[in-house]
Image (cartoon, rainbow, N blue to C red; front, side):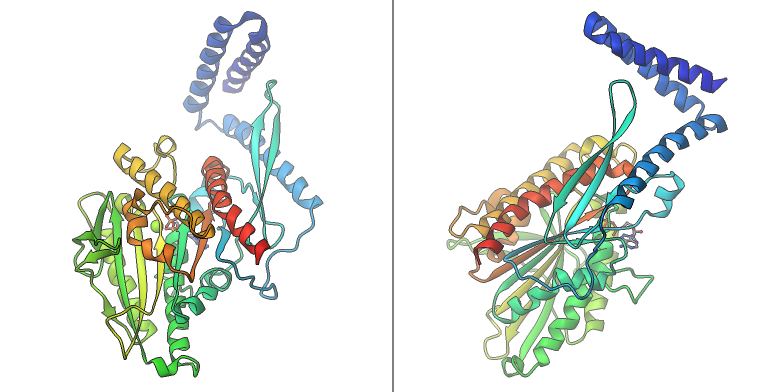
Length: 426
Ligand code: ADP
Ligand code: MG
């Protein structure tokens, strides 16, 4: 019976939509009322098998449309044989696979990664007569990393080429950007339950120690040290010192300093892993619920290189940043609630970040680093003559994340515009 009710409402909604043009506003109101009723009917009978079958049918249609699309295209995904192209700014996108809860919700994977640099988002849309169609959005980046890529593969095409920058006396930055749950922490910190799946922090540490021992750099006798802090609503917390709140100072020369930030000298990858673990434990505790604060804050892990001869001066620096989730406040009602203050703070810092990266691509451009604490503490990484940046935009594959995914890709695309220009000029 529920199916009949539901389809009756649907037919009514469809016919009222056809009447819209002639009847104007009252018809619209009526349509909205009917649509509301339809939604109500759907929620009420969610546990009813026939309805579930109806929903599955829609999903089945969507799935087969995407499969049709995938059958017709040519596949040549990124492989280890592909060259690493060096850019001033590199933008890569990483798609993870559907997770357990997405599979349980029968979510459909709407992301196709056909080649080494292309991402397609199949957005489901409804025509006025309620028939469904796909809008396929194409995006091109420096690298498109599909769901079969390991952290090591991601590292190879993003952060690894920047280790050289640091050893040549430059400042490098690597950002993980994306909505909460898209895989930023998994990529940067690795998976603690799977030691073989090390993250970019540990993989970078590994290369830094390798480089330091190499004949080309050995004579510097480099001292390697690390810091790990979190930025949450304009405040800096030291993750290697009981989350102590630290002050940011800017001197007359616009040099920015985090006063009292813990910096630990490290001699092996294991020591770095200990710091990552320690920082994570710190990150997870606080007044607010653990997951809330960690997904609303930026975590910054830094490696400093100092030569034994002149340890007072930083020779090179590598900053690796696990950014706050970029999801819009409006669509997070299902997960932990984001406060307006948190949302505006995150929004502001991600906007400033984009502008600062773009300024890096245009030498001599105004650097709006005072726009946020994040860009303020990273200021020196944007102004050094030999700075390199990479951004890894993480995306969730499910249809439920479609809007956030499109937002993430559009943001990454704007960062990339100049990256591409830069590549063409060189
Ligand atoms: P974020 O930091 O962006 O909020 P997480 O890194 O915490 O997201 O990832 C959310 C969940 O998905 C975690 O359980 C994580 O282990 C899992 N996950 C993320 N990326 C991958 C991946 N590439 N492969 C396997 N599991 C992943
Ligand atoms: Mg995270």
